[in-house]
Image (cartoon, rainbow, N blue to C red; front, side):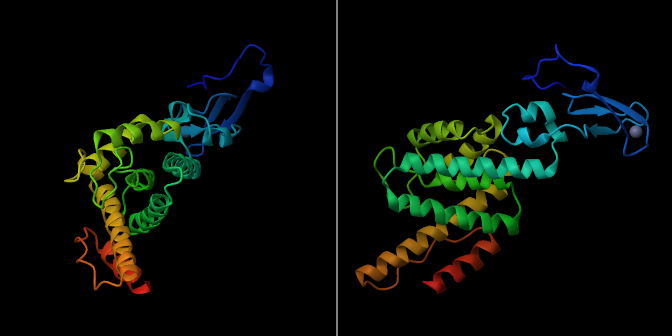
Length: 241
Ligand SMILES: [Zn+2]
């Protein structure tokens, strides 16, 4: 498949590059804008060695162009970039609501720790974690455990699109946020648990802090957590306070 941004009119002979298949050694010819091609001898999918995939980190057509051929280090960079952009957009949305910005950073940090140990999808977990902190903000109801309303979902949708989130990722993130009983897709269950635990830990820390400030006794027992990593992290974080 060709990159939609290229013009082939002025190409000379240097536009073709010859290489050999890493699997069988058979010859393969690439046009310079071709990201990948199947070896005619053995059928192996081979990436164009001359192509600079650096642009694919930013190019929104990259997944159309490269699909599953995208090199793993490139995929990781795209994921990092998307996470950063999403966090920035959520911060912009929260404006001067520093309590919620602080919450977002904590939930993001906790969710990423849990995700690393429990599995799940790093992009979906981080995006949902960042967006969880906008719950109730649009309608001015910011109590703990605020449900993610339709209004919040609409705000989340536009934040995700400003961050350049692919549609499928955005709809999975919204499904995690909008369903307190669990996401639509079974394969998002781990992602859901990572985010839910991170939110609960952040809420428990905030409750403990406000209890300390007010000089009241122990806060109510925190909600139970889904994951073992979450339980350990909660213990560790609360002990530090
Ligand atoms: Zn081959």
